[in-house]
Amino acid sequence: MRIEESRESAEWCAARSYVDIRYEHSGDGIAKITLCRPEVRNAFRPQTLVEISDALTHAREDESVGVIVLTGEGPDAFCSGGDQRVRGDTGYLTEPGEPGAVGRFHVTDLQVQIRRLPKPVVAMVAGYAIGGGHVLHLVCDLTIAADNARFGQVGPKVGSFDGGFGAGLLAQQIGQRKAKEFWLLCEQYDAGEALAMGLVNKVVPLAELETETLAWCRRMLRLSPMALRLSKASFHAAEDGLTGIQQLAHDANLLFYATDEAKEGREAFKAKRQPDFARFPRRS
Ligand code: S0N
Image (cartoon, rainbow, N blue to C red):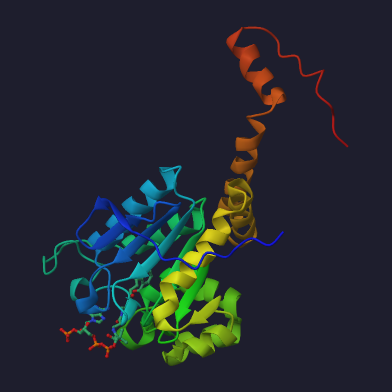
């Protein structure tokens, strides 16, 4: 049976209101988070990251949402990374210019949140994905890029580096030689080069970016949500060490809870009796 491919756009509806981002629903299972700071090529400040994190939490909890799209406002940039204007001496500051204020990297938690999120997250990239903005697309599960997309790391050019997902995940995705080239030369790569090195899943003309991304999302929405969740967790189980295994193991527990065997343990405890596990098979 051949399933008809939907090439339709979406009637986006605002689902919550924020200052630095837009959070919208398509009405058929897709949530879209848009970084809305085009005047700085969608650079993120701490508030931007806190808002994205909140929107992701809502998308996760909302059972009507199956896939999440992360993107940037306008054709010029997906995201240019941390807002250099609020970069302090100890991280990024919530109140720029505050002498002695202690900064931090809010993006650290957000990167992990995207990795752990039990629904696919798709980066929809037009224009620049640079610095911490490039790492944001790296931690997404899939990337659909417009033909004007440009990718790169700038750390050593601006006095910074990301030795976490920024280096490690990049090396896993495109190989260590090329990843080192990203970080040691700080050059930019166009969409065609990104596709050739396996950094993105598909490149389309800018005008088709959203419809193509939606088509990919709708293909995933037709699949088993639990199998998608376990597939995503399976990839990270090896890559993320014990915390990756933890997620996959807890997902197994989630499924085990629904069995009569697990329920017997719960019911026996509540009834203050010995559990009777003898009736359950010791599987080979
Ligand atoms: C994106 C670039 C290549 C776009 O170039 P283009 O098109 O020529 O535009 P511009 O004229 O340069 O920019 C337009 C306006 O936007 C401002 N702007 C652009 N990017 C930023 C930014 N990141 N912060 C603040 N402002 C920005 C420009 O200043 C300009 O404004 P006006 O019109 O007023 O002049 C180009 O813009 C570019 O290279 N941008 C800078 C990229 C950059 O430095 N990014 C930050 C890198 N660092 C991080 O992302 C931090 C990541 C992080 O938090 C982290 C986490 C864990 C561990 C380590 C780190 C870490 O620090 O790396």
